[in-house]
Amino acid sequence: MPTIEMGGSTGASAAGTGAKAPPTPAPGLTVDPRVPGQNYLHLAGRLSRSEATRAAAYLTERGQPAIAVGMDSGTLQGNNTEKFWLISLFDVPVGRFNAMEGQRGVHKERIAALGEIWARDHSGTVSFHDSYWVKYDP
Image (cartoon, rainbow, N blue to C red; front, side, top):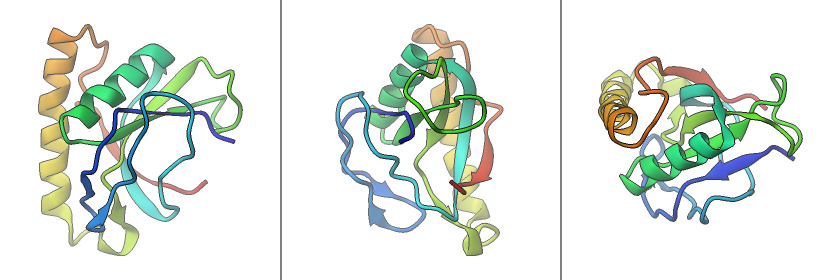
């Protein structure tokens, strides 16, 4: 089972599909809520568990649900991972990727603005400016 850390509770809509995002527990292990075939914004990689879970909670509390996923040598297996990906839960269906260019841009700008505050005021080592879209294919 993948190592997943999530931010605080949210009822925010998963903007790409219009569906309600699943409520997320306080940071801890849970199932991966991403949908195979959807595109997600990867915000940072190689983060410590502590920073990744703090960043996921920070973003989620500000209306941008995110998760920290253990890297484990390029796989998502195991609970002993030392480094984590930080991934936004804003999903973009693969068939709508181009059509949602404007929404993707707005989302990326919001994340970047929050990332500046994260790096400046919360001792973050990353600012989320180098984020990129990845199709989730477990």
